[in-house]
Amino acid sequence: MAKEGKRLGLITVLGGPHLTLLPGESISDAHPEVDYVIQGEAEESLVEFVAALEGRRPLETVHGLYWRRNGETAANPPAGLIPNLDSIPYPAHDLFKITRYANLQPLTDGLDPKARAYTIMTSRGCPYKCTYCSKPITGDTWRPRSIANVIGEWRWLARDLKATEIGLTDDIWNLKLDRAKGLCRALIAEGLNNVPWVTVHGMKVNHTDPELFQLMKQAGCKRVGFGVESGDPNILRHVIKKAQTLEQVRNAFHWARDAGLQTMGFFIFGMPEENEETMEKTIRLALELDPDLANFMLATPYPGTMLATPYPGTEMYNVIQKRGDIFAREWQDYAIHSDRARFTMPNYDPDLVVRKWKEAYRRFYLYRPRRVWEKVSKRSFWTELPSTLMNARRFFVPERMRVPGKAV
Image (cartoon, rainbow, N blue to C red; front, side, top):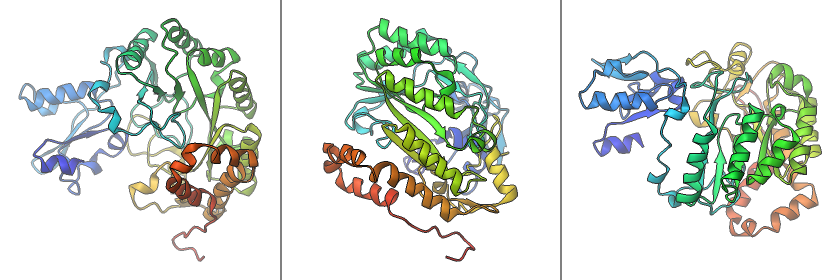
């Protein structure tokens, strides 16, 4: 996109999590199509940047800006976190030609493949310290918008922009249980519960209770997701550092199902110290919980950071660098839905990880008649048959990994 912009004679400026992690790489000589990079939260910095382009302030005063000066990369002082999110205008949803865009992620999030789907973020950040998680912009902070501010944007999406589906994209929207319940009550009171919504990034199971799920159902929520991650208590507590228990996981699924909500579980395979026994526990927990959708992912050593500063790496990334070997070569190797193991360590078998990952999909979706019938009885199974077959091959067909330096 930046190359196309330069071809049209435009000034290109990039931002976001990846650019915050690796701003120098993104504006290096390898990327002459990139003119500027803004690191961190950019709403205020972009206003400063436009003023600088118009000659109303020096480029040196734009917070978080990386730019080229006399053939060298210049890095300005960092941008701070915006303390009051209510001070930020709503995203310009109306400028998007929404019919040209895909709906929410069809394998995990979306309810209707033809929906006018919009997203909304009611808070930023997460204070938890899961070892696989990259939080380059927000760090360990959590800042909520006021309920009134959220309702204003929600009303605009539902009534003016005619949204037929809304996805909450907070890292942890239910951190404060009373606030989450208050938001649901406000949606009900405003009559905004006629547009279905889902929790795109899931919910923390240890910040829930039966009343929350009942209110979510009344407020129009259709599906909730939970980051289960592992069925092994030791992996959950000491490797992932998830700060939740299996009992809390079971309670959350039970309460959500009792409220009439669809459930989705996220499970990770191949964390450091994983073996066949720990991954088997994860598969068995997924079968026990029996969510409407199960999403099994391979652990990926993304070079992020647990703090709002770039480069040190997630805890998981640092551990693997010290004790193992990362063999991701391109950025697409780090994709969240990758179907390859991307690292190895002593007493760690990447082939086994991929085998158990595919086995999880087969045992959850393919080896149970009810699950097979649920899929083939849907019209989309047949209307999207090429995509269906491609995903079936990817998830269900056993395949050996080829690890560099390892005989196969």
